[in-house]
Length: 409
Image 1 (tube, rainbow, N blue to C red):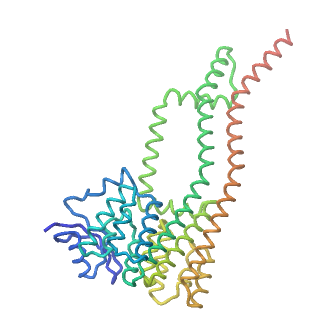
Image 2: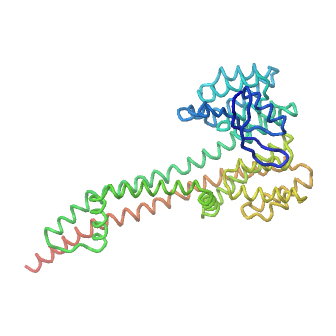
Image 3: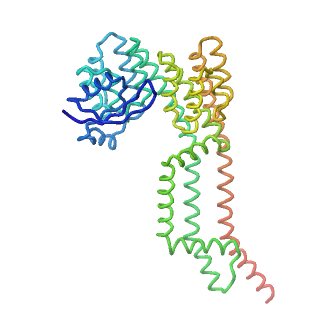
């Protein structure tokens, strides 16, 4: 008998359970948990917890790899191939080592009698809770190929939005790097020379130049302190962000910050609508669908709002009414959901909401790129101009002083 550490969800209470179970194998442990009415999320050999985890450092699974895996598996199942044979065919086409090893483990688990969803749940770093729940729903309803196809579409949409946001941020990052490099160059090379010249002539530097020369001298003499402060500050900030309070403050900042806040809100609205629509279309009950959807949002403020709305739905209110009171939701979302509730096609309406906000995010990112470029150029010009002025003013002062001396002579 082997001791396994497991994480499972109790569908009756909605709570996540973490404990240990004795079994001969992972498949046996899964069956024991299912027999107890639990839905396994992860099962790990307690004595070999490191197991497959080490491979994620060298070769992580990208969204593109997972989309290819999901779409190919959907196509093969739809063609009538048995599940294990479909998995083997997909595994032969994989180039990502981490996903390939995980797929081999999934094949062995399915051959041992475990369902696909339970086998996938053993690899939570690759297949998240939304993925596992949808596959389980597809297995129950006999529409696994359709569910996998929806999953692939959802992953591609989500990845496309994130990719566009990252691309939009490339230009500001490059400008900031150039700005810092220029300032460091001027502080470390030109300003010390100007200061030495003024000192040799026993002349007083202008106030702006004095301030920058003081900064330059500190950076040159105590560079190790500057690096230490930057490193310690960065580590402290990251550590704080990982705390519940820090995560909440950061996520609140994301949706409230000017210009970018509305963009983040639209991303979360699109993610919420598409994920919930996919869950409902796959036959998952509303409360369970909302519980899984909130975990896909990746923002604790919005997640808390979804949980409060779920509690109201459980008490008998409609989803649209439950979301109206949440300030983290854009008002159009509950309004559109209300129309879906009246027509009896809430999943279709949620898909329309997702499509609308995905298109809106595309337009917003394009506008953001156009807006950021001149703003960054102005900021760059002002800061570099101040630094250059601090170099030129002393030189100009020396030139005018010498001219006055010649004139007086």
